Structures are given as C-alpha cells and as structure tokens.
Image (cartoon, rainbow, N blue to C red; front, side, top):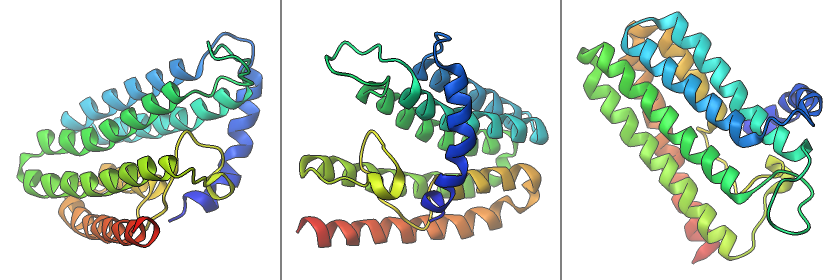
Length: 212
C-alpha cells in the first residue's frame, strides 16, 4: 500500500550509494546474496530469541534488498545480451524475488522455533504470505504475457508489481514489530494475516477484471 509512495524517498539515498559503488566490481547479485545472508542471520538470532540483534539484521538485509536494484540500474553492463545498458537482468530479478519470499517466511518460522507456543499463529501467517505471494507472482506472469507495464507507479522492475494492502514495506514493518513486541505476536499475526487475505482477495478480483 505504501511502496509506491515511499519509492521516491528511498530511491534518492539508494541511487547516491549506487553511483558511488559504480566501477568497484560489486555486482547487484553480490548485494542480493549478502542481503539474503543477513536475513538468514536475522532468522537465527530470532530463533535464539535475540530479538534486537534480529531487528538490526532485518533492517540491514532490507537495505541491501533495495540497494541491489539501484546498483543494477547504475552499474556498467556485464550482460551476455547485446545492447545491455546496465546490470539489470531477468536472473537478478529472479534471485531478488526468491530471496525475498524465503526471507519473509523464514523470519516467521524462526520466531516459531524460538517461541513454539506461537507456532499456530506463525503457521497461519505463513499461509497468508503464500496467498499474497502466489497472487502477486501469478498476476505478474500473465501481465508479462500480455505486455503490461507498471514502471510509472513502481519504478523500473524485472516484472509487473501488482499493488495491494500488504506489500513489502508493510511486511518489513510487521517483522520489525514482532522483534520489538514479541509478546504481541499472536495479535500482530492475526491482524496482518487478515490484511494479507484481503490483499489476496483483491488481487484475485483484479486478475478476474483484467484477464477474463
């Protein structure tokens, strides 16, 4: 819901850092991999109930998740495809989205490992994540087939980004919340899970309108 509104604010510092990294040999995929590693470490900390260490690592991981795309747009091309003007690539986009969804669900799984009394609500929240993720990716597949583009609202992306109530920024906020207020996990999961289900329903409805 807030991703498109936050994008202009986030892009300014990310683009400045990306320009400074241009020519250093640091590739977008390296940054994606490093961000994913930070996410794994965050999950380990959460499983050990080191909540504030997990919070710091989550924020660092998501910073890397934003930086990889900025570097891809500013770095000199290293693509095997002729005519490439940057390091943006379909493979990079693939790595990015796979690591994102593994990160989101991994954090919730780690919370349940550290606090098994919350396992049921953790399972519910992961189920809701599957709904938002699958409805998002399935729409993107059909949108690409039909040549649809959302560059104006979301910036240049590897695939179509369908909006919803719960997007990346809201999910990151919730992951941070459970680190700061772990005792509220069940309540946070119930509320956010319901919003995720509403997002899934809205995306399915949008697909019905656009693709029927």
